[in-house]
Image 1 (cartoon, helix red, strand yellow):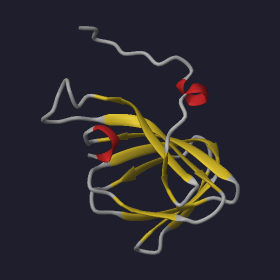
Image 2: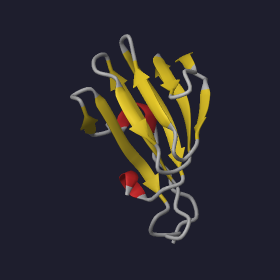
Image 3: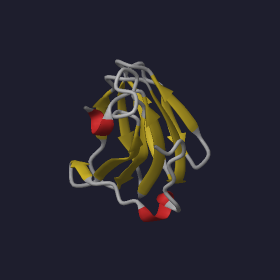
Length: 118
């Protein structure tokens, strides 16, 4: 069994599937679910295109880094950030977050959960 798993050029070649609103796409590139089912982590890409905002309530902890484009990200406390490439976020389990974009945004995430949100 390999100890290192490699997906070359994932940022440009991996196309996440549509998950909501005809403009929100998310997909895991890798998950440790089968290797460590008790404490899995999953990582992949989230792309949002101009249109309806996505409101998401986290059922797990997640880290996200913006890699392309721009997001407007807000939480229930009223905190709002214009997120650009290089910005890093930590979303706590239970957080209700709203994502929108003036054009599109692409983010890489790593979450403490099983594959594809399960």
